[in-house]
Every structure is written in structure tokens, then in C-alpha cells.
Image (cartoon, rainbow, N blue to C red; front, side, top):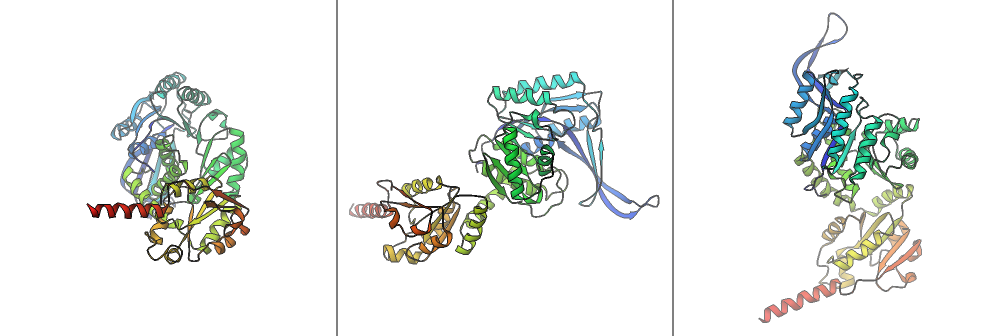
Length: 481
């Protein structure tokens, strides 16, 4: 995942001020059976669409916010926070006829005692709404990606959503929507939607279980109805699910501890907005977003994730992820069983892969394109010596496994000690067995245990033996001179 390149983001939506009163509740009130909070701290942070913008800024992105706030002290506090956090506020409009929406949380330590919501029902003046919408439409062309952050407080009307989406299409700018409510018609034409499980149920008119099967079944129905290319479902303790073209990828939760879920969805939207349309690998973007969500719920209150925090966590996870691709046969069978339940096609190939070269990469890439999951089996060092001689391998089995695991299209690596992988193939029974070279399909080891054998022609001029011979020849010539 490349963190250096970022989108310039325009966020449009409902702006909220989140207030926190934090202290210690050590006694019960003599007036009523309620705790008395000895307040130690009062603080205000950006909430709603402003929290999405704040997370983008914290991640090092350039962001501008469009929305409406009241002409009151809370509104001025929001503008102060926007400026302090380097968030463009020129599209934020004051409406003196309403109050700024606030959510006040009373906290005893990390425990929320009560939440007070104020001015949820205040509706902006039509004239102010029109001014904001005109300015936001004009700003679309100057940004790489648009976010509509709908908190159902009145700003994200059907007219505004459709005007912004149509303008974005005109300038070929992707639109991400964090939806609310059951009326998704107003979001038609958006590129990405980021609902939670409850919101999926709301739009379908039925409760949806938070299981992989239920999410896949209901999201398949929703994708066909809504005509939205990417549906990214946030699933609380179950993590996230990416739904795209009837492909479903589940990402388990990365949270170690959960102190406060406030704003977890906002940080997901922020990460996706920052990197979508730059990286073709949407899975890696979702992994980063899922990781950021796991980090933010481990903080108290509406919090943000800093760029360096995410880079460090993602780097550590990538290193751990490479090691997780290496499986014993027993572990592999468990994982493959889950893949098969989801109807995935399993592709298998094998080799020594001593000095990885262009020929290897080409063959592996072709193999990966034949199915959903690619398993690569490699010979142990002892096995390679039996097959290739005492001078081989050049690289150890651990190094070879790590290099193969680093390839994004390799999903699993297994090390075997036999001369051929026939026993592994017998146990796994892959759908497709891929072999490089000029083999006859029925002569390939393990062919009888698979659905189909595919022979991929080796790329001429590339082999480990030739590489070693060239290196030895060059070394010999250097010694002569």
C-alpha cells in the first residue's frame, strides 16, 4: 500500500459539534438515584461530516468541508477547530435562524453515562442551502474525490445529493456516500457506499444478521437494485465486507480493545476517500481502513488516526501478513474449506522457485488469473538438493517462502519435503493445477486429483540454472582480467 499519494477531497454533509464532559462519578445524588459527576475536563471536537474531514487532515490529506452551522458559539467553535486542523472551511455556511447541532457525552473515565443531542430538528433556510449547494458544485471540479456524509440532519437532501453526483460525473470524479435511512434513491450514481449492517437492513426493510452468509446474500440483492459498483459494509466487531461485482471479501476486525465506537465509520470513509482511485487494489485500501477503524475504537471519544500511526500499523501488519500466508498442510485445509464454502475456485502450482525471475512471475500471474485463490507449494531445501544437486538451493526455503508470500496474487504458500507435491494435491484437490513447461497434462504429478490441468509455456531465456551459469561465467571472466 502506497501512502505517499493522496486524493484532494471535498466532504459535504451534516456538521456536528461533539462535546465531552469527563470526570469521576464517585457518589449518588441525594436528589435522585443518579450518579454525580465531578467534572475534570470539558472539550469539543469535530463530529459528523466534520469528523470525516478531520480524519482526512490527520492522515495528511488536503480536504475542504461544505455544510451549514448555526450562527452561535458552537458554530464559531467549529470554525475554530476547522482552521486549527487545516481543513478548508470556505464552503461552510452560517445560518443565523438555526442552532449548531451538538452531541454532548458525559463520561466517567472511559464509560459513557449519558448522551445529550441538541438541535437535531433545526432545518437550514432554503436560501442558505441553495448557496451552499451552488458553491459545493463549483468546488467539485477542483477536487479528486467527493464524499457525501449523511447524518440525516437535513443537509443531504435528495436534490443536493443528485446535484453533486451529477456534477461529479460531469468531471469524472468518484463519489463516496456514507448513507443514512432507507431512501437510497437519492444516492443513485454514486461509486462507493459505506453502510453498516443496520443500514443495510433499513434499506431492505428487514433485519440482517451480522454473519458472512447473510451479508453476502443481502448485499447481492442490494447491489443489483442500487447499481452501485462498490458496497463496503462496516460490521462492528465482525470487521468489514467489500462487495463488488458479486465478489465478497471479508476483513476481520483489527480492534484489540474497544473503548468508544464514536466516529469509527468516519475514519473508514476518510481512508477510502484519501486513497480510492489512486490504487487499483481496493482490497488493500479496505485493509487500511479496517485497521484505522480498529485503532480509533481503542481511543476514548470521537478520535482521529494520525498518518504515522496508520503507516506503522500497516507496515507491521504487512510483515505479519506475509508470515500468515505460510501454512502447514493441516492449516491450509481449514482455510481452503472456508474458501470452498464461498464458492471460490482454488488454483495450485508448485516448484523450487530458487532464484525468482521474470519467468516465475509470469507463470504465477497467469495461474492466479485462472481462479480466486492461488496456492503455491515449494520444495524444502533438502528436497531441492535431492533434485538439483548439493549446490542448490541458492536461497533457503524460509527466504523463498517469504518472497512468494510478498506477491499480492499468491494467497498461500506450503512447503513440502517430498520430490513431488502429489500428496498435498491429493489432500487439497484443487480445481485447477497449473504447471509451467512442456508437460503432457496427464503426466503431471497429482493430475488425477484435480478438476483440470493447465500447462503454461515457460518464458524463453529465463531459468534459475541459466542465471547461475551467467553469474559464474561473469565471475570467471572478471578473474581473468
